[in-house]
Structure formats: C-alpha cells, structure tokens
Length: 146
Image 1 (tube, rainbow, N blue to C red):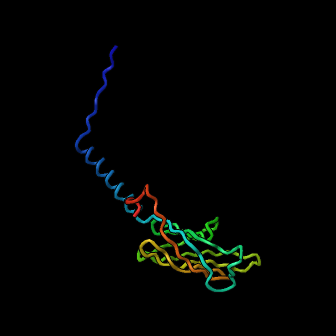
Image 2: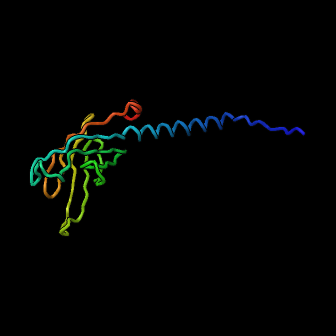
Image 3: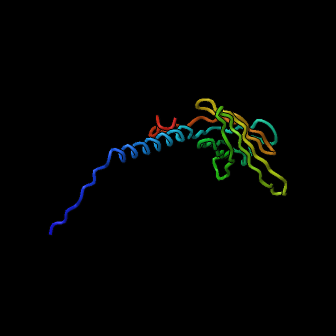
C-alpha cells in the first residue's frame, strides 16, 4: 500500500511574512547586543580610611553592561552593585546594606563610559576609590557586540 503525501508549497504571502518576522527579530537583537559589554580594571584607594595594606579593599573591579542596566562587582566577587547607564555614558549604581553595627552602609559608583574605558569613583562609608576600567574584547564576538 502506497501512501501519498501532499507537498505544501509556501505561498508568497507566507514567505514574505516569515522573512519580515525574521528580519525584525534580527534587527531587534542587533540593537540590544550593541549595548552589551564588560569592563575590568583597577580600583585604587583615593581618600578615607582605606590603607593600601587593607586585605579587604578591592584590588580590581568588573562592570557589566546589558542595554541600559549595569552591574558593578568592586572586588570581582559575589557583591554586585546594580545601576544604569545613560545614553551619554553616565554610569550610576548604588547598593544599600546594613553594617555589622546595624548602621546603613551605602556603596555607590559614579562613572563615565567613553569609548573603551570607564572612569569614575566607587564610594563606601569608609573609603573613596578611583575606578579605571577597560573594555574586554572577545575575538569571537568582534563586530557583533560593538
């Protein structure tokens, strides 16, 4: 017994709709990918009770950008300070915690992204740090995430 199968030929209307949707998705993804980046670099003491010999001071930091949202890890650890990046490159992030003594412990990042660098200050109640981060480029994604 032979079973006949019916071949469906895509109508020009369906093909055009599929191409329109696919193109829209690719353009939308391209727009969001263009604002994704990672920056790393030194976090150095500038002012306050933050001696260079302090083992708890951050030595380096990482800033991750996704769209208009940022996450800053001041010591490349588990602590991440969430914030935003404006179209002009202004970075603002803040995290409010309670210290061991129950007092508020606010951490903030005020910085500016220009080209492949982000510079600014990271502030805690005890210390102010200078931040100088450089964009990390991944060869696999060069040209896609610019």
